[in-house]
Each structure stands twice: as structure tokens, then as C-alpha cells.
Amino acid sequence: MGPVNWIAVLCAWLVAAAVGLAFYGRAATPSRQLARHAIAALLLLLTAAMMGHMFARVGDATLAAKPWLYPMMSGGLALAFTGPALFIAYARRDLAQGAAWKDYGVWVITYLAMGGVFWAAG
Image (tube, rainbow, N blue to C red; front, side, top):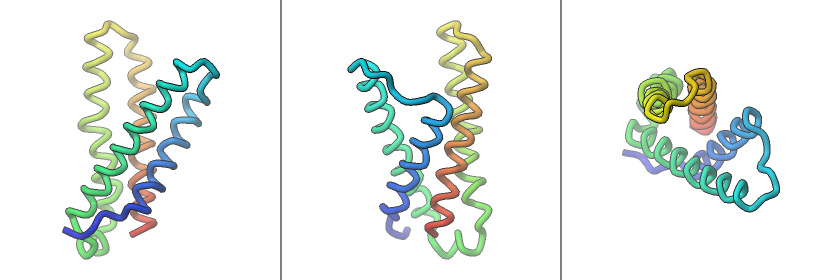
């Protein structure tokens, strides 16, 4: 296992936040909204750190020889774990499945963008 590229982690975190802002907009001024966005930011940082750890476990040599692993692994996380978790949560709370599809798409784009950052920082 190689070392985690912490600069790439921070850059991936910023890109993920930018994708979120593009789809969901900025926080409103009430402190409750700011607190929700702060929690989301911390969770995005956790996601970026774990993705950085995942790519470090694969190793630089393997990733250099097989660059398609970046989108395959990052997109695969969104497609196989995050998306289904969203649908399960939305179904249990009897929320509109259309909103789940939008959120699913946002997370796939977010994870692929984060994988792209790790590839570019490779």
C-alpha cells in the first residue's frame, strides 16, 4: 500500500463540494442550514479520505498500468453502494423516488469527479 495522497484528498473534497453546490445551491443564511452544510462538508471530507485510502491500497504501479480503475472504482462505489442506500432510505421514509434518482445521479457524478481528481493527481 502506498501513502494516501492528502493533497488529492483535499482537492477531491473541494470538487465534490463544487458539484454539490452546482446541483443543490448555496446554504441559506439561517444557522440551521449552515449547520447542515457543515455536516455535509465533513462527511464529504470523510468520503474523499476513504477514496484516497482505497486508491492508495491499490497502489501507484497498478493504477498507472490500469488507469480505468479510477472511474471504475469511484463510479462503482456510487452505483453499487451509495445509490442503493439512497433508494432504501427513500423507500423506508416513503419519499418520492424521483428525488432519489436525482440524488443518485448527483452522487455518481460526484464520485466520478473525485476519481478524476485522483487520476489527475496520480
